[in-house]
Length: 423
View (cartoon, rainbow, N blue to C red):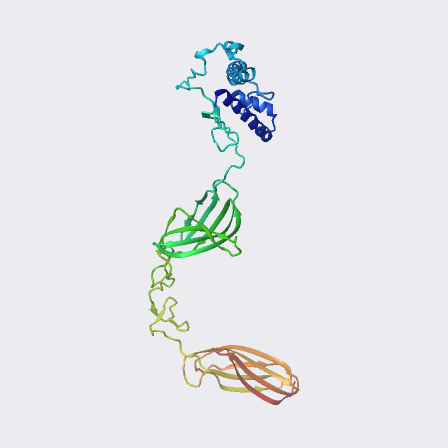
């Protein structure tokens, strides 16, 4: 095939590509074709919508464009007119000859012309003449291959491990997945625990977390697997598996628990591992009298040593003798109260003694005496009623006290139908 035929085919190819690019970019096909003929790129360098460079750049570009256009169009003109380029004087118009700037480009040491364009044969704007790719390749449906990765940011605290990770497609292909994660925890190289997490359907990214708590001392690591679920045939089975590329390692140590670690202490803490100085012990035993009713009671004593002494027991109040007498206007009673009935010096009780007369069960006159009775001694007491009027009366005498048991004691003597004559 001749060089002229190749150039015509190339321009025809460019015209077809210009139509496609124009539809994709909303430009006029004529403007796109001008770009392609200009520098092989649809970069708005020519045509009616071309971007305007500054003066110096424009001058340089115009010179390069002119040469490129002439070089491209001359074979077409020759074919159409049937004459040589020299006959038209076209080549002479350029005055470039063999020393053109294309052959002497400092970035092109080989001396060959540089032709920029798309060099990927899968692109719809592929340029078979390009020897330098300009990054302009365009594809109808560029392929997207998912790249699933794990981004792990797990941590531990005391006896807990918090598994946290993100499962994501680094290429963001918007691929839909359905399945579940399996997290297997290993302790000192052996399987210790696991967790199963159902994800449902998701696209591009899934955040996952799982907590393992109350872990014993040891070295822990884990692995993660995502199992896809394939339900295309009506039954759901495991599909592709994605395994985490690493196993983060965590060391769990027995936590320090402060408390009393002395088993002899009253507040011994069997869970404590570090003594905090809080142990409490029973005080050393103190011997002495522990009975508070004893005369030598020791409130500091914790162990009774049998030395308690007690006061002599209190006696019972007894009436040794009593005698009542009267005259025309008065009546009196003499009595002797003692502790017990035998000689002693024991303490007794405070005794209230009352003497009164009554008529028809109605009290008329009374008198009261108070005595502390102690020992067995002759200590006669007397109570007297005076200014009595004539009449027949009943006379009464009682002694009342409260013993150590809180019980009330009572002695009583009555003299009925005593007639008082009055003045």
